[in-house]
Amino acid sequence: MAGEERYIGVAERRARLALRQRVAGPARAASPEEVAGSLVALHGTDPATVYLAVGARLADPAKTVADTGRALYTDRTLVRMHGMRHTVFVFPTDLTAVVHASTGLTVAARERAALLKDMAKAGAPDAAWLKEVEESALAALARRGQATAAELAEDEPRLREQWVYAAGKSYEGLHTVSTRLLRVLGVEGKVVRGRPLGSWTSSQFRWAVAPEHPELDAAGAQASLLGRWLAVCGPATEADLKWWTGWRVTEVRRALAAIGARPVAVDEGTGYVVDGDTGPMAEPAEPWAALLPGLDPTAMGWQQRDWYLAPRLRPLLFDGSGNVGPTVWWDGRVVGGWAQRPDGEIAWRLLETDGVGREARTAIETEAERLRGWVGTTRVTPRFRTPLEKELSA
Image (tube, rainbow, N blue to C red; front, side):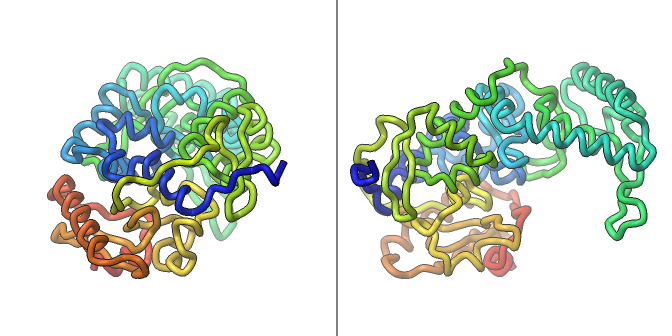
């Protein structure tokens, strides 16, 4: 009954965030795999975000670049692939089957249908032809191990073929088979992002055959994924869950019932936690500071964010599409933003001063130096730039 629901207030939600998302100092992790396992998913649209998000949570950030690269491209314990809301994420490899079945199948069917429809409208070859090209490209990729689209086109020249999209429209464009097909194969869980062509910040990448995984029941996979995420991010409302997964509300409710999620009261209304997680949680022993990158999974973790990010700060910290930029945190809430300048300096600014005194400023400066120390001579520019980041980086 609603009257029996335990209330979980802002202070306790911030404590859960600090410890379970490994942003408070004592909760920091020993490896990228431990970070990804704790967070379930790291935003991977911007390659640099993955490394910056890991580095912010490692006890020894000097290991960030080498260990994250090893996990992604040598040991393959982490994989960069399409997931929720047709977005690229980094997941623990053992979650690939769950992600594919829970979120990828519906999107994949839609993407392939759209590709075939666009090709038919342009008078391009049909589905049987595309299937031949697909099978040939996948075989070539398996032989090479990892390859760029251009390299695959050396083995399968039909990947270079083009057709006009939306002919006669203001948004008319020229599409290449390789670009559209590899995107579809990524959503279908057949290929994943491989090693970048340049440094760890590069947005150019190779493709690799996806790790083999069993085909799971969609409803069971949704329950599994939601349970993993709720254990880290609970309490969360239905609106949060629907937003993060990209599922219909009926799917969210079915998954909540399947895992036996427990309702609790939060300021937005009814939230949910996993069974056995309704009890109180102690706050971190000491206040903590963190510098998190744009699209960080903690800053982007919930649709309803007022409990850790004041609405008045959003115009400076978000771009026009709702992507969060680099944020400065103090004791469970966003209090400002940061950027890297051309000379490597980490510049930051407080946007929230209430309760942010000398101790906080010292801790934030320590985190800025910590970040600069492991990033070194690499220059990082977020893919999605925000007003404050642009101003601070100038």
